[in-house]
Length: 372
Ligand SMILES: Nc1nc2c(ncn2[C@@H]2O[C@H](COP(=O)(O)OP(=O)(O)OP(=O)(O)O)[C@@H](O)[C@H]2O)c(=O)[nH]1
Ligand SMILES: [Mg+2]
Image 1 (spheres, protein in one colour):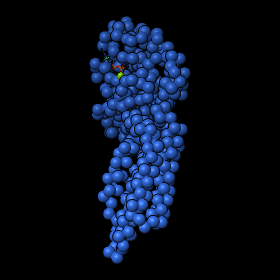
Image 2 (cartoon, helix red, strand yellow; image 1 turned 45 degrees about the vertical axis):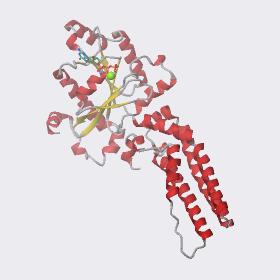
Image 3 (tube, helix red, strand yellow; image 1 turned 90 degrees about the vertical axis):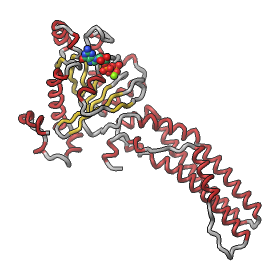
Image 4 (tube, protein in one colour; image 1 turned 180 degrees about the vertical axis):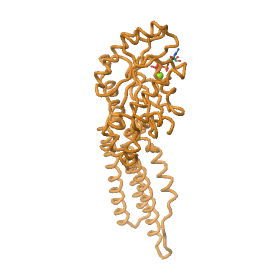
């Protein structure tokens, strides 16, 4: 695996996990069609032995191949980026997944062992009926071995499905996380500032779907993601798993945009929204936060002024009015540039791709806006 593939959702590369019943039926189909290389000079018994041997061999090879394929498709768990590692642990329990992969490996070894034993038995007999019996015995033993991991495989199928639906973040790219109470306009903001159509993804322990888009800052794709059901109510009300889920955001967030809604449609009071921000700030104290006031189209001048004073919001926006986003967007880009310049993790990643002279300079920021 190269660095780049490690930086994306590593579970997306898992194409298909074959369920046990399918492994068994496919292996039998192939085994029944198996054609042994039989030579004319062979006796009848030798020909039958060769045919039975071939059937056992195809059956075990196919089962081993399918089981190996499950294990091979999994990324190396210890090399997964901390963000996806935590998510994987939340959704699937890393220890359990490791044990399952180990068990599947063990089963493939046992299948190979049984194959050797049955081959040995075949060599010991010259009776066709016994040969068929030995092959049937092999079939029974293989099937019961594969069935031992059917629960495990079902668990992997279910877990991988969830893991694949987590957005395909590039964890080495700058990421803006949109937070705020329910209904403040988080998803609408992601849609409004994204280039192109945002993707929809899922996240553990939220019932809502996450919107995930990109914004080009110069030549750098900056990710924007909202957080429904996560950063929208006090952390003390949450269980351990939900808290862990929130904490995993730390591994991707470079900027947090916190949205206020003081309109009559607000889901929680402005005060509660302020408390929530304090809560978030404690948890993510090292991550830069921009506070914005949304829905100004339905607010009076007084309400806007009051909100600004009370909550120190830096930008007033309305998602019903594109123009109101201009200053905020410019600030966002400025901050992304700063982060790219200063954060260690970006220095490493962009070193090869951008030499310093190409890194945006603050003085010529305006030019950059138009050049790229
Ligand atoms: N008038 C007005 N309505 C807005 C504005 N922004 C968002 N809305 C409306 O507010 C509602 C909620 O917007 P969403 O973008 O879904 O809010 P959200 O924060 O993603 O909501 P959850 O995902 O439920 O937490 C929608 O009906 C939007 O149309 C705005 O600037 N002005
Ligand atoms: Mg939403």
